[in-house]
Image 1: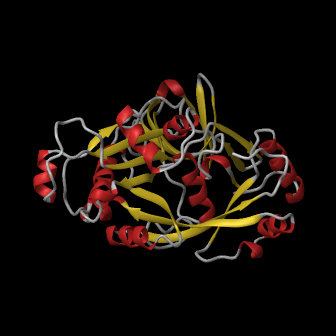
Image 2: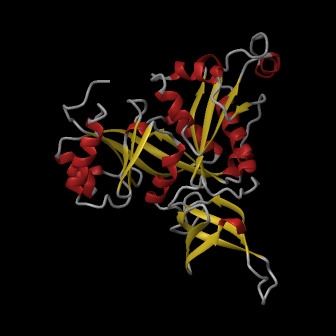
Image 3: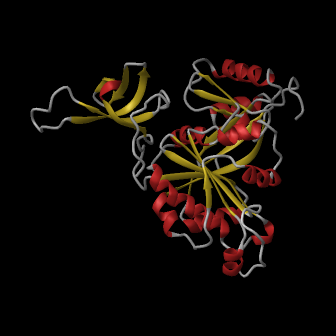
Length: 354
């Protein structure tokens, strides 16, 4: 398990954390010298942190902290841990796993802009309250995106197959001429189930840095925006890039032609973004010439195994609702559909075409 750090400066305010700290004197009943505070991180400064626990706020001198880390939100229902989170809490968990060039908040809502690169990087996560009437909040969101030459876009979540028109926010957006698109499934899984489903395969190349080779191949998989793409890919609290490159061992194992010297262009990619106590899998891709060989499954399971060192036991991913091939793959690995979301996009004519 990943060791908890004594550094609390990078823990997001409002996140759920566990902070271990030294008592002034041993507990008279148990003799313990350490205790844990589990709850929401309310504040921090150079000398103290305050955690809202189930028993009330606890203020802890930073000099007494021996370990601290972010942990997943509390389950909201019974069942498997990866399915026990509410739809809203999963949206909160997913938000830091994919990056953005610019982030802002409107009450509880999270706004993201990334020069048009990816819908996730250029949309609102409307979870919680915006702190004002919905109509006013929508107008503020539209102004914020228009100032950046982008259409306002809301990632509206609900149960699988939900109708955005049945949601109060969704109904208002549709009345304003917003269009529904990119219906997406949120799939979740427990780490060890994915690890156990590994079909086996060649070794992975893993890095916390965005290497030129990984980025070069990724640019072939979709339209990118120089500068914005790199920022988005790196903008998670923790990130892991993985790839598989062909070589002698891979060619023998898969019955493929010899690919040449080591260090050549990868033929399979994946990325993990870690935040809010979960890992988000994305950017999974295999060269068409090498598909059907189990590389995507092996890459996913290999990354899941690496999460043991990160102390992360839960994984989420997003897949378009009609991508049957990907959905079958992830189900075989042990992922279940948790919920879904749709993008509702403004027809605002103030924005530029990108």
